[in-house]
Amino acid sequence: MTSLLDLPPEIIQGIFTLADQPSRKQLRLTSAFLGAIGQPYVFQTIRIKPGKESQEKFKNILSRPHLSSSVAKVWLDAIVSDDGSVEATEYFDSWQRDVVAKLHDLPRLQSVVLHFEDSIEEEVLETEIAWLDWTSRHTMHTCSYLFEKVMPTLASLPGLTELGIKELQNIAITDPSVTEDLRQVLGRLRSLRLNVAHEHTRHYDDDIDLEQVHVFFTTLPLCWLKPTTANLEHLTLYSTLYFGFYPKCDHSATTPSPTTINYPGSSRMAQPSRKST
Image (cartoon, rainbow, N blue to C red):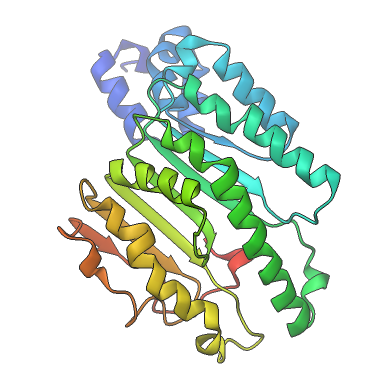
């Protein structure tokens, strides 16, 4: 029986292409031969989570050129429930300095996914008042976190052609310097995926009456879609509202239109923004 090591490298590369990430990692560790072939597939996508352990792994990749040159896509998970404390401010500053700014050291980086998570405990959300108070604060801190800490760096990455944002709050962008950075990023994109999180009432039925929902429907085409008209080929929009973007979202600003436009999950009842995927 032919051993895996006896197969031509082209076939082994095909196996790595079709395998999931855990299988790729296991295959790569079986021998030096498979390790060399599998390295680009194992490290082409990395995920950086909050905490020192994940950041240390990222530093280790950056310190090895043969690994950092394999990275084409980065997932950035970040906690955005800022209570205004000194610790929260220090966290934001260190995250920008030790993670975001280091994206320049990945020469093949083409795709970035930002995933904003909250650290609030379940029992805090026991009442509708607490729920709306949390989502209001979440909106404010996500805005600061995204546009002040991340966008300037993304705007300076010439190879960036794909951007995904999960848990993007329905915010209006007003800072001129931030909007300019955002336009630069969007203008180069071939693929854009937005997972838009909205405030929710306790029973969801009154979500349509929330003012910010209607404000966002107006700003989305002009702020996020119009700057992409030059190069965008694929657009994915997801909304945590059960009625999604229909019928308010006007795509006339994106001319010519993207090749594909997807609305995953927007026609069904979605979970609260902190649980959406």
